[in-house]
Image (cartoon, rainbow, N blue to C red; front, side, top):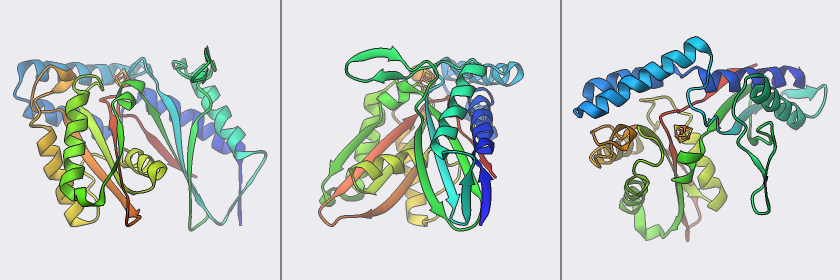
Length: 281
Ligand code: SF4
């Protein structure tokens, strides 16, 4: 059994959130550059120029890519040969978020009570934590600061099994079309299908962790990803919603077995501030 001190995890979480909010991943930056070349609209190309410049300034000066530094979402893949010491893992994760958002001067966006009080928690806690138990003695920590504007345009739907592939495709296209300029395109589109009402939303969010061009290992599903991305990019919403060919940079589908009577589907939209970072300890 390998023992990991939770204080190490706390430091990793802090570092990852600060870096995620300020240092755009290479695949997103490369996609901005390539998409700028493919974009036919002059206004769209100008938007890409601004996105590239914005990301470069953020990297150079260690300032946030966007003022909305998001809800703090953490994914943990925990090897089953790991034991944690030095305190409660949840407390360490919360403390890592607290330190990142206070010491990193990131905007605190979380209100304590969604119904009765707009009081801010003042440190962007609590994080949302997703855990998976895997083989081995390592822990992979992934953080995803999720902006509110793109989250607001995401959708979940309990479809009928008979709706099939065509029904899911229509749901995805309709969701992006309805979203229009609101989620700050160009987008990443995470699609979940199967599981239960709660799990399908997780699948759609997990899909957003894939890198640009990283296809589903099932060739048929990979084909849907490419085809549906083309359909989305025919909508003409374009960069910043100002018209153009590039509404989305990529589309990822994650599946899970479903109940014979159910067909849960979810579309989690990610904005151009598509931020995530990982570290394996
Ligand atoms: S949706 Fe994304 S780009 Fe738009 S304001 Fe929120 S975090 Fe920023």
